[in-house]
Image (cartoon, rainbow, N blue to C red; front, side, top):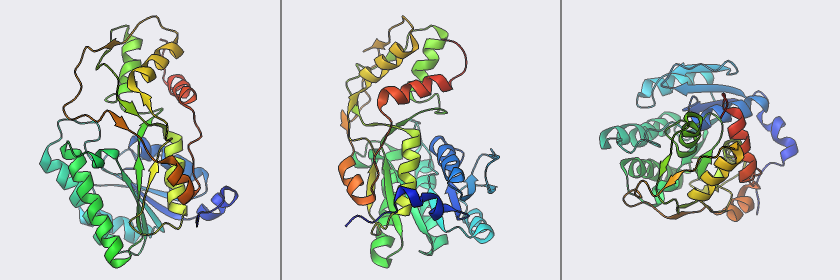
Length: 301
């Protein structure tokens, strides 16, 4: 049985609802905040960087590794729903094991213990958890295992949203598409692997709507849905489309770099299952999303 709220009732569901977002200043967090504010929610951000967003109902500068910061956020704003996006190392191949565990595992446990099952939590997950080849992946997987354990044993309303290859305006230059666009702007060659990795590219506003749909839906505790398109596209094809859309004559340097050790060559989400469970599908086709991304960047190419 599909258990989700029809799109026409979305604003009614969120109207004046207090929502806490950990990692509100991050790439996905900023877009999620904006979408929830537009839906009528009272959005409270919790982020270790003091980057207050003007549209937020409230903001606390703090770290999820500090239980007191989490307790203060809960006591002050009494959120009805929590989106847990805060994490370390998503684009940092040199993340230390100690920091990974402290933020991604212990930080998640701190949040669970502070809430004690009284509030629904939507936990942002990563496909890296399915292929444990980095401290980031292992620490995220461990954090989710604690979520799953408490959800299964105690019935706590914790669900997962596995976000696939997210891209769009405002993404860090440590990621491949912003880095490629920056190279174009500077007129320099952009070195890449051969680029045959297949990824499920999902536009950031679609990710935000997928997270919102996950929160609205009556998913069983410990259930994870894939926030994905279900369509795989090679990295080299995506970069080639990006270059073509800019109208530049430069070409990327495919094969200038090796593949990363242990890199998965094909990572795809199950979009059909997600549609069945929460009634959500990604809407933005790749070329459209890349065009929006390019247009959002300032300066001439």
